[in-house]
Length: 158
Image 1 (tube, helix red, strand yellow):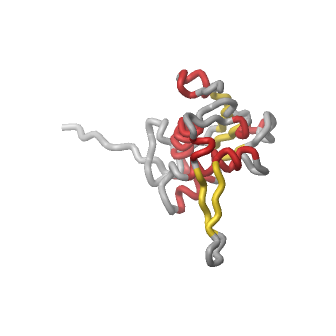
Image 2: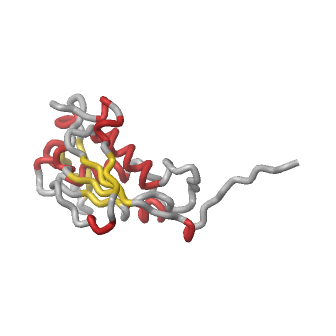
Image 3: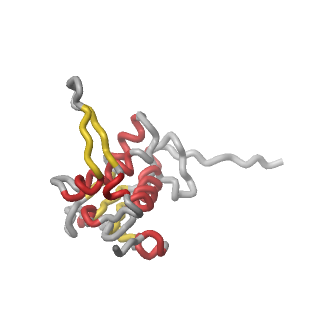
């Protein structure tokens, strides 16, 4: 009788690809979910949970992402300065209009990866987010993925 064995990747066997995603008019949650799956490697048939087998992801136009509903004004990001009474807050709209609009997407992806793990921290280093059209990763020959065309719900026009 033949036993089926589960293929388990070793870190040396992993081949990482580079992909580029245009975030213009993309819905933040759907885009973050897609990026998190690619970073973890769950799109691969040989996915191994304890090995970093995901791709390098480059996101352009991160400042042009969209939220559904009233999340732009109602979604609040909190942080603490470390001083007494130092709780600060900003809405998603304020962050998108501010100095670092790519942080909205970065936080969304970070919160979809495993919590507080060294593997998740390493996978986050494989994510590159840029606010404009340009990115310095042309030498890696990245594959462009048309995220907007995968599903009609992935894009919001208004």
